[in-house]
Image 1 (spheres, rainbow, N blue to C red):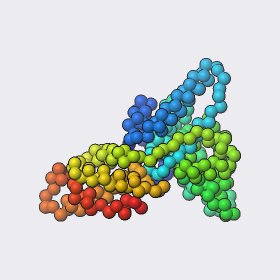
Image 2: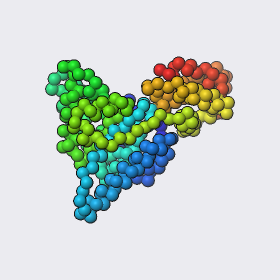
Image 3: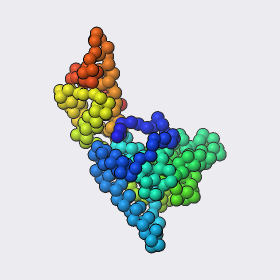
Length: 296
């Protein structure tokens, strides 16, 4: 699990990783740091989908459930990670045929010229068929009302596509809580299709430290006890002074990567470098961290 891996870099690129079993996917979900309410909500979602499937198989009346979701929360709270796990879980329980995740933002959906937006949206939808279409910062589609903006056209096209492909496409829209509310109110078609919300809280200082420790373990680094104590202080301060743009696990990833550079500069001055040197993060490394860089 790497909530700090900002997969924006690979937006729109289909997962090519080997398919995981339901047990593996659920274990990954359970192993995420924090997010207890999110985990409960996801498990309830899986339960209702499974029960509705059994009802259908046994010829009982079907309830018309919308499986499209709204993920609300600040950046770096694991929304993309959970969306990716959910797409695989839905494949494994027979809701989706492929279970891949296509992640897009406004720039992938809204064109600059007349007549280009609808085809652009449909291209993305066709890529996502059989899986989950994850639209990050979805509210930006309707944030500009100028005559040269085609965001509303993108939303209308998306709503029609969701109806046409209702059996093999799930759309997850994500962003800040207040802005997502505005987004859903911008079109009655959105309100009727998105009625399930999952909220991702900011991580606590303890959880941020846990994420940092896991990053170190996974990458083969060992902070000294003194270094960890200083990291804990930094993360507590960043959490205490956070604004809406606080990037949670991405801030931790940023801190971790800055430390790797500081450690590399320190080691480059040594004549010989032991394996222990290569693994160690020291207090003096932490002292060189510029807090201002992490708050941007």
